[in-house]
Length: 272
Ligand SMILES: Cc1cc2nc3c(=O)[nH]c(=O)nc-3n(C[C@H](O)[C@H](O)[C@H](O)COP(=O)(O)O)c2cc1C
Image (tube, rainbow, N blue to C red; front, side, top):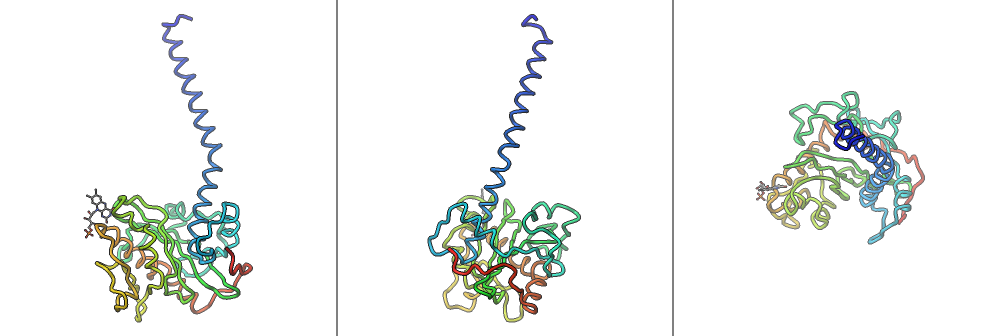
């Protein structure tokens, strides 16, 4: 066939398109398990950091990390009723997908929507950390809209269900040097020991408007301001208030206080 033939040119274009799309499809299929494994490792690392089960400076390898994560007591909570729901598989539940699935999510009423979520999943995976036969911590997923992005994090509470044990934000797209200060380890370290609720049971935790004076009344509830990033900082306060409020985990925490959970997997105290 003549090289100037338009049919030949068309066939070459089609052939190149088919080969390229096959290569892209193959790459997606081959890389998907690797991507999922990375996501699982990331989640394991983020959550294990909050459990208090890793000894200071410990950096477990991937296999060990996954084994530790898989041995956590992970349960699904029905956020609206505040009860555990064993009909949903905690290993496969995808809270992000659920939040945009009309059957698995609910609209957040405007009066509660401080975190600008619009909708939230009806269910959430929570992680119970046991030491011997006592509940030591509970780790709750949190999220909320900030200046440029949704902040995704976890909040670990002590067994009194009021004192912060640790917190992390593992995903966001706030500005480097401004909003991304929410991932500063020294700032997150300040969260430890802060109280969420005041004496009246109202969420009182906040990112302060300035520096928190150690020993002051507000020091029990507040962490330092983030300089030049008040919008993101206020979003953090708002999302904590939402998730620990009546449309978030409040009913669940109230039930846990009334009916302390029973351990359902072997205690893994002092693991490292
Ligand atoms: C390009 C650009 C990016 C910004 N990114 C953020 C951000 O990620 N988070 C944030 O809180 N403020 C950000 N700001 C600043 C806010 O507009 C606002 O000035 C700031 O939150 C106020 O904080 P301050 O009271 O501590 O100065 C950004 C500003 C500009 C111009």
